[in-house]
Image 1 (tube, one colour):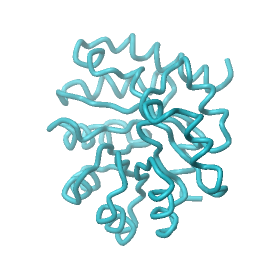
Image 2 (tube, rainbow, N blue to C red):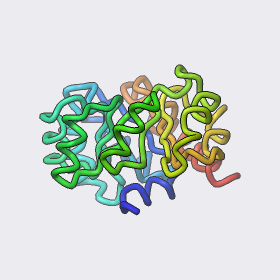
Image 3 (tube, helix red, strand yellow):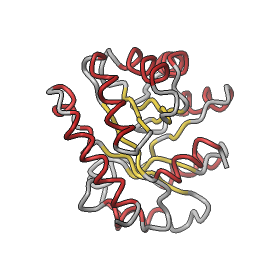
Image 4 (cartoon, one colour):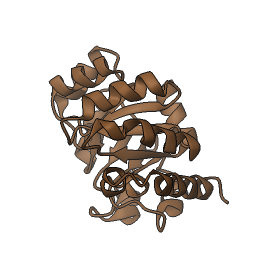
Length: 210
């Protein structure tokens, strides 16, 4: 198994983070470490993303660091040059996926249909993002869609929270979940890092069955 995927599988959850101001990076990283969840998917939804990734890589080398919302090859290059260890995209863009495969970059592309799953399988990818999870029909849809593909695992993202996390993680098709509920943009921008730490700890306890 790919070592990045193996780490994600052990962690079970990855915080999906949108940061408007890179000044929040260090206190956020500290909150994740103190919360016992050394992982972050920094989304390219703001201009700060590249700098945030650079800071995390330098200040928190033990954090499993991904870049999300990857929509262009330029963003692939930006994220990898900044220090990202893996990439996540909301959809399945063949050009981006093929570029990543050719350059030995770990990517978890987003899928929402059997046809997209088969495009991934054609390229040897078996670990995929199911997005947007809840809006697409949640586990009911995932179970139906995934049934023919016994060797494929999914990372549901979109609408995941404490109320449904346990059910998702118990599903045989799920290897991890992405979520932003414990790292909401408002909490970050308002500097509520102790609250973030508490939410992260709560999520970790749930994953561990506590």
